[in-house]
Image (cartoon, rainbow, N blue to C red; front, side, top):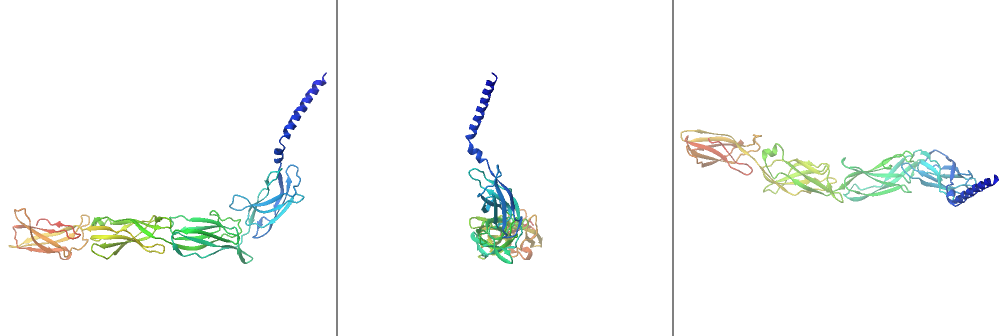
Length: 452
């Protein structure tokens, strides 16, 4: 009586187990693909390599679950060169009947090396732990092709040459060298520009880049600003030298005060300013540290005269004092020709400089029938009461009025002598008052003496 329930429970357990087996048999492919392979004993015949030295990689590929050797399977040797983030295949082979492989190759550089199995229908991909291989350096050099010393700004120039390494005393091409071409502008305010390439199978390289201004060009064995010690070639660079990128120029915004007084212009300084631009092949940009000469032409003259000079700043702007020349004159700013700069001339601006005048002295003395008026006229300003220019040869007018009268009468004209001195005689005695007037003459402003 006790056996029947037990048998029922046993059948129930068997039924449950059967259900489990049936469920498992429904996904055999998933279970199989999780099985994988494993590399055992991966080694390299050397850990430090000389250039062109063959290196042999050995190991065994086995089934991860059963440990059985995997015969006839493809194996790749992969290298991650210094400075790179990805592995690249460098050699391939096939496992033997015992699952082992031996693959011999030469490497383009040191770096991390691994053996890789891509997997098949029943096994997933796998690879070994990476091994770091170092290198011994060989002498290297750049052999550069010639470039022009001067081109119009914006002209494309081809920078080419060959990377070579020395083997047993002979120079031979080196393929696959990372190369950076560096353009260094002629001013420290501008940043260097870098262009990258890799030498070809013949060691050759070529980059065609625009020369937009005067700049120095060099090549170096670098990758992203870095030389890596596990490259075969020694660290080396070479200098193409300076290329003059010759630019057209223009002056914009040239300004100068339209009017000023001589003393005010002279002592605080009268300034001319503007901007010089150059054509870089695609756009107008500021001419850095170029020279600008100022020229003036007095009104009525056909001759231009050179004045002061200014130098542009890092943005092409310039500003400097100019000379003070009485009267009206036209002004120009002229860009000076240089090895990389073509001359240009600004538009013309007009400037008028006047000069204040002042009776430094004026006095009268009398005889019974005559009066003698003497004095000196100078140019003058309140802050700088000294002579700026001679007034010799200019005119003064003498006026008189009778005592008790308010009406002035013109009497005679005199000429200023050296240092602006004058001496005038009137046939009128003590019963008259006098004054001397310097009228506006050219750039000189009028002035009047006190009543004498």
